[in-house]
Length: 622
Image (cartoon, rainbow, N blue to C red; front, side, top):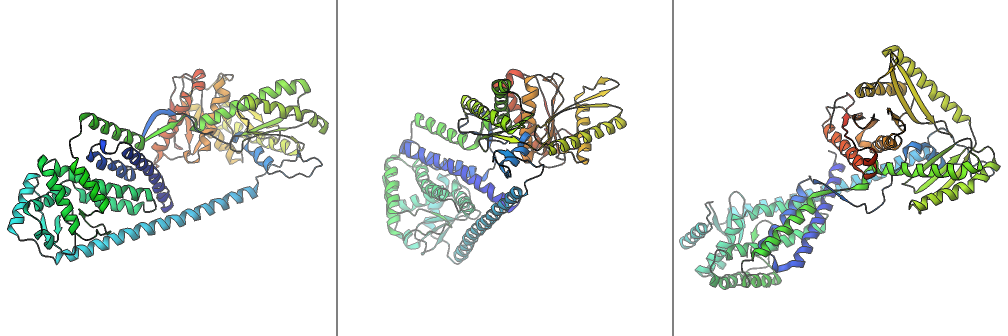
């Protein structure tokens, strides 16, 4: 994985973590002390898991689409691109001379923009790594220096304290070996070390405490050790170093450390008698009043706190009591709810590229039907037309081949108002409408002849190789001679071939041979449907085929659909040995299945159906 990819992934986890952190903070504020003290601490573990676990659970629940989904209709993208970059050399700016060539300026601009974005991301990625490594190295060096100093400190040999330590360990059912180290410069009692734990305490402070106060201090520090708080503490430091750029994450872990102390107090109090609560609280006050200001360097876990924290801890110690089962149940439900929201990906119904493409086709069909019925039928048909709808640009462009300028002016106003009326009816009021004229017929004739020649040559080659007849039914663009769609059928000994796998292989071979001869099939839906007039033949196949092709990382090359009791075959340029082959295959299958469950599709295409996603070497990868 490249550094930039890793950084983008960290940003995504940071965003998801921020959402979880925000939910936790809001719930803690709403319910406050009514929820158990331990809940306030352990709920933060959901944030830790969210920041280190890259996986989500997928839900079949559909969230209504909160914003419009825009996709470009690739079927007519060549005309749209040319029109949007037109130059006018005629008297009227609405008359076009479309050329059959790519707009190099636009491509260069896109490349430059991509380079600029990549440079910016690369810079941020390097900055992130420098920040994370700097924090980690600083923490590591401080810890090494701290432990080196501890090696020079003397161990406690006070028999009374060691006996008290043993009694406290027995009370907490602990067997691990724990040393007590005297360190006068460490004000507050602390615990340090994961594998060789040590209680660090000032000798002067220890001598100022009574036996019972010593017991309370030892119980507090040993409870931290028993709960593996020191391990969690270091895990938090590493996570903070990784997400150093996110202040909400830092604030959340600051709150978590405070909740850790309160939770530790609650654990100690649960092992004491009711009349000992006040004594324990007084011990906390006594210790914290005698210690110096807490260090900001995170190397151990101690009792240090500022005055406001002391007040909060004492109040909670005073009010300590076991919560009723109602609040315990509520706290469990809240934790479960946060977990579901933080770790579940809810699918958005209309975010599916295939559904969006289908909606585009439907709107195009509605416009075409309307202009044919309400304009062309009454005022006469032009020599031909191309309709392009772009959801991304929010515009509809109709290019017609009128017989004359007079004919164009005669049709233009009615066509524009008619399209605007359809858009208004279909709730696309914010779309712009352009009606343009196309005069030059040279490119159309030359391109159409070239494409037809290639198709015929390939059909002849396949006849010689396989002894089969290929029947290519093609529809051409009225403006520049592009093939809009192609209906292939194959016959052997006068009988049509209907086996799905055989047809799919013949189709792939046909396209490969045509591409070798200069045929561009990227934006051409190719059909293999026996009942041509079905709704899903005209609308569903292009939606699946072109919708999948728009998602570049899926590497879909073609789609084969026969009828609803035959498999839908999705061909890709992925090798089956690719580590991501199965993952991509499952993504494609999921997109197609979701699309076919869409209400309007399901009415005309109820199934049963199967989706076979094939690699370039014809192996099923889903």
